Image (cartoon, rainbow, N blue to C red):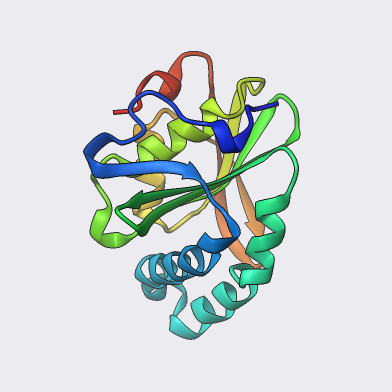
Length: 182
């Protein structure tokens, strides 16, 4: 189990003016806006604007996010610069020792600034009992696939979830990203 979220922090928490912390209910509106923005930026060219709106309305509704925030054995994190939420990660441990990264998104204007890498590292630090991390990324999401491959993930399967084709990717956690919070 991870440490108390209220007391959680790590060395380098405030690197480059970006702070990573557990989300609160007050953050849910900002997290939803971030998810809608990043989904439209990433997936409109692949799925079309209407389909993306349908998905974000269903998957990223504030009441859905609230349930995820309260889920046991999960980490619902935000990255913020000042008071602006610019990144978000959600992970949980449904079947130890596997940590499932359900979401990792950074606002388009803040991508390629190591914020995603720091969110990934923060999630792994919160679940020290996990020995592997698993995720699914949309097969045509070239930016996402590239990010995860650069961070040591390998494709283990092709899957279909909610009508979307995805790549299941995994990585061993021993050592890995947990040492790089810069």
